[in-house]
Amino acid sequence: MKQPSKPAAGEFTEAEKRGLYKAIYERRDVRDRFLPAAIPDEVVHKLLDAAHHAGSVGFMQPWSFIVVRSQEVKAEVKAIFDRANVAAAEAFEGERRQLYSRMKLEGICEAPLNVCVTCDPTRSGPHVLGRNTIRQTDVYSTCCAIQNLWLAARAEGIGVGWVSILDPAELRVLLRIPSHVIAVAYLCLGYVSEFLPRPQLETVGWLPRLPVDELIYDEYWGEKHVR
Image 1: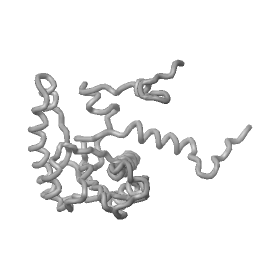
Image 2: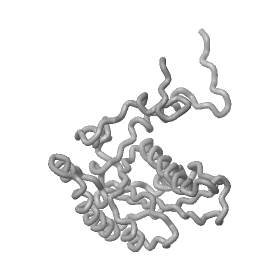
Image 3: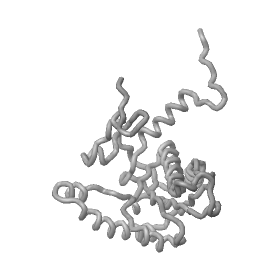
Image 4: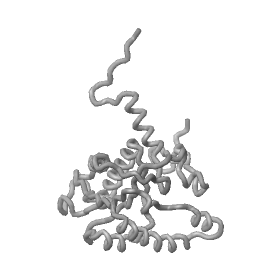
């Protein structure tokens, strides 16, 4: 019987590949179902270290992580969310507005851990390799770190929710973020009772997942390959 060949140096085994794709396809934005159990410090460090190993333009590593455990601080962040959410709801009308008001869009106080991920555009000085023509690549790099954290959390059985309905100026003051630093994401983390089979917004009918083939062009924008 032919023995399966060993993967070459640097290659993933089939089991490792399956694990990677499982984390990608089963990643969810979690707003509820958080369990009260604390995330062990060593696991929190693993997640943040995974985030820290994201790629970044010019290797500038512009991210920092504010870890929030205090219920008092969470309550103040929740108040910022509540104010912003009232204003956000006014953008919708009729059935859309009713659906919006029924959805739970954050788990700030329920999640045992919150993390604010920031971006320092001045890190590594005024001239960063590769950022001369596209200045926003520092923020793009920080988003890569957030995705790393999210996938590592999913692999650890930890849910993550991104709270984007927040006033950045109020959050900056509350968390004492320097004026030149950008608060990119406020995340809620915790073990959960379950991961939904599909994203919540897809399940409730807010929007469907677009077919990937409709989003792929050949050579130029809008050009589709004839198969």
